[in-house]
Image (cartoon, rainbow, N blue to C red; front, side, top):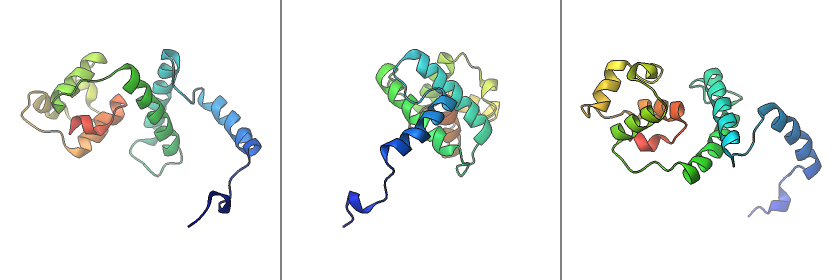
Length: 142
């Protein structure tokens, strides 16, 4: 069994030297207030535009980190009631003032129409896209 002392761990000063420039470049590293939430979600949108679906992109870890911070804030401040996946999508669209055609980056308008009407289930791939779009977990769409 490996002990913590057997691993190479950076010293606090080295971590601080890396953390401060990172924190300055990102602008927000934790989300505890509405202003930090807005900054984090705006940064997530920029990162999503850059990264797309490339999970091996060097910035993917930064995106995941910020998404976790945003999720924790949302879980505490914006609980989404349990709902059918198509109702959850409709709710999020209403909250963001979006129409079906505004989600063309996630699915064709005709597919979104079928989903919202309850005629089609949400595929795993579309659930991932909606999750990225709305900064929520994909499981609410499945």
